[in-house]
Image (tube, rainbow, N blue to C red; front, side, top):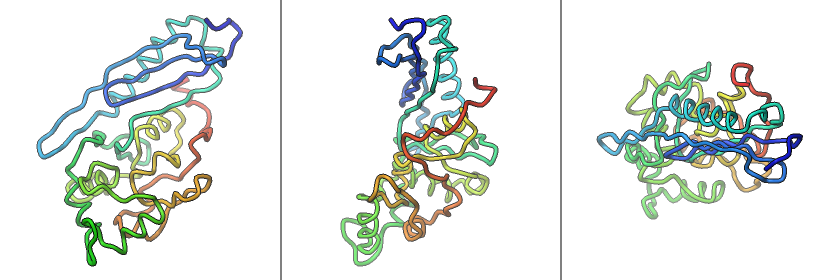
Length: 242
């Protein structure tokens, strides 16, 4: 049990099936915690989606329950940290509102469009050799041909929901979406941008977008957020959240 004067961190961990929130002391002791479930909608044609508003309600509900369990702890919280499931895409408008459901890492509807972007001649393992070498050089991998990663999701929206694609100010991962709701700042980390295959990952201290990879992907740079290190402090909580 943390002492009454000990500083606390509110830690958020949102996976595919639940949002977990815990208060952790600076001695790594869990003071209180709570869990709220999250649903996945399985759709025809390989679709799998989740509701970003349900994410937010689950996170807020778990946070409130945690603070009730640890009565009097609110004033000792010095930071909020967030981690989430990965390779899930949320299109948001310029005000940060989700333009629809998030596309899950289980969703394969963008596969045909990914294959259309990565194929060519000479062909190696289903990839245009020139493009494959560039992806391997900069990212250490290549877009997944099944469409389950972020690039597949964006291409699916681009081709089958062009109205959503056109209205999208940014495409965000779940962690970046929750951080936007918490702070009001559009940003992706060096880690969360990885499944879009458009960045130079060779130096983990300086990751940035690569024009050639954006061109191969067929997605404008403006659709992606600015990048920050994985341990960056994004800013203060929005007054409506705090």
